[in-house]
Amino acid sequence: MSEVGIDDIAIHFPKLYLDMKDFAEMRDADYGKLNKGLGLSAMAIPDVHEDTATMGANAVTRLIDRNGIKPTQIGRMYLGTESALDGAKPTATYILDMLTQRYSGRFGEDCFRNCDVVDMTFACIGAVDALHNTLDWVARGGEEDDRIGIVVFSDNAKYDLESAGEYTQGAGGGALLIRHNPRLISIPDRWGVSTSPVHDFFKPRREVSIKSVISHVVQLARETGASIKEGMVDRMVRHLPESTVRRMGIFSHGVDRVQVHRDEPVFDGQFSNQCYQDAVEEAFRDFRSKAITDGRWDPDGETVLTEDWARIIMHLPYAFQAKRMFPAVFAYERRGSASWADVETEIGLPPSIDDFDDTPEGQAEHAKAMDGYRRSISKTQAYRDFHADRIEKGQRASSLIGNQYTGSIFLAMMSTFESDYEADSPLDGRQFGLCGYGSGAKAKVFEGIVSDRWREVVASWNLFERMAGRMAIDQVTYELLHKGIHEGSVLKPRGEFALVEIEGGEGELEGARTYAWVE
Image (tube, rainbow, N blue to C red; front, top):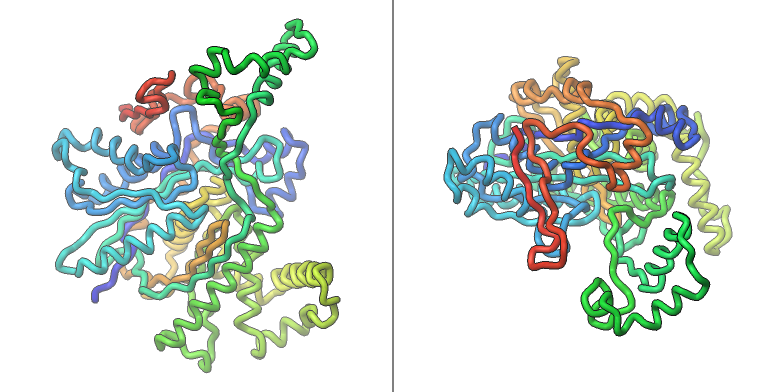
């Protein structure tokens, strides 16, 4: 069977950004902690005309045009996202609609009619799942079939204003060209997996009562100077059954509660970090076991598996996440070796579970002590050298864009390749380790083998050059965009897809979205 993998990558990011210095001043936060501690310099902010579908479609267009692909050649286009625009209609169909508008003049109205599309959702790992699935589909077709698939990823990482996660925001979309004999990186069919049903980060269907809605309206009226009598809310609720609102509005059919969708998640940052760390470590163990079974790696050899990886590409909710999370894997692989003895000489032995009470409180204390020990590992010279050589290049773009949710691992891959291209690094034939994670929670660890043609692909990206052309926005603009009340686009769309209209009212097409290409 011939090799399959990623032939090219395209990334689209908003042209607007909020500088982290301005964010720190706005929130009275410690800029040094955000920048030096977490690696944050800026966060990408979508304009009024941008959403999950436009960012994904713009990335696919860049990929198609750059590679001269005919739409009829694309058999599959799977989207990984946790920012879907509809509870039933896949966001991928909106992307397909835009692409059809763009290419039908040259290739006909049915140029994408036979392309299979779907959304895949598992928090931030959805695009890795889409990649895994599409690689299998391309491989099954055989080299002579020359199947071409595109994996799309697009998200708006949005948190509540003034929340603990606000500084980790970001946005963007991208596309991977998947085919046989890829020019960038091939991916063997060997995957380590860890899945655990936890509630570290999620976007539930939330409910609000009609009394709560009326109370908020009455409070707003009072704040604007209206005279509202006491007890009015209760009287309005009592008279609701015969009202027009009940008969025709959102509380029709006798319900007294309505479901509300919000882009902002429910999350526990510390718990999520622990879930991320545990999942990646377990997925790595699973991958390592399979690598030994397959004969890919000999555990009795002179090097550990991660030393075989010239670069390690990870999901980055914030730029320094990998720097903080990977010490667990680093330690797991090296315990008992001569190099690890030097680490223990520097920082001591890890906390023993036997030194803590066998109670939930004791286990929590041990977990806290282990977290501190992992931080100590990250400060050792051995780990700092490992991180600088294998991980650091991937965090450079993340620092300037922020969290892209499903796309952050592929943004890290582009950041690494382009940084190595500029440094003229000898990557031909080298192995990359890749670690994806999605809350809820799942991690996947897999490998890539760099093609000897990678430079001709990376030469056309200009990732960092394009980021330098963005426009900074101020606090007022940022908050208006975040609340969805900014009047018109900050920058008029040009040479891109744009959201034109969302159908209002309560008719048959309520909520339907219309897009167009803007020259």
